[in-house]
Image (cartoon, rainbow, N blue to C red):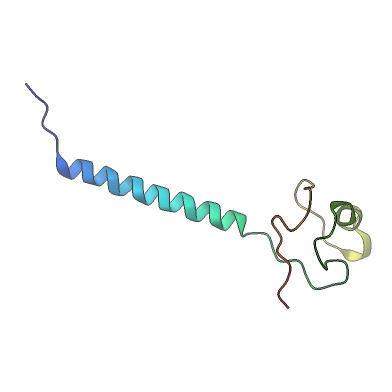
Length: 84
């Protein structure tokens, strides 16, 4: 006896898969946009080299916030330059 395919069940799983893909895309997009923009200052003009970032943010010089992640090759991969 052949198994009867329920079209409503197939459509339900397609809709759930589509919702899952959309949610994953939104979560990844928000994760990548979570880094704050670099504030306007002389140090942050242009893409600063990673060494300059580490000198301030790892050693906590001049009340700079600590860097809550591992060092990267440069900062503008995640942190955009401020528009102001």
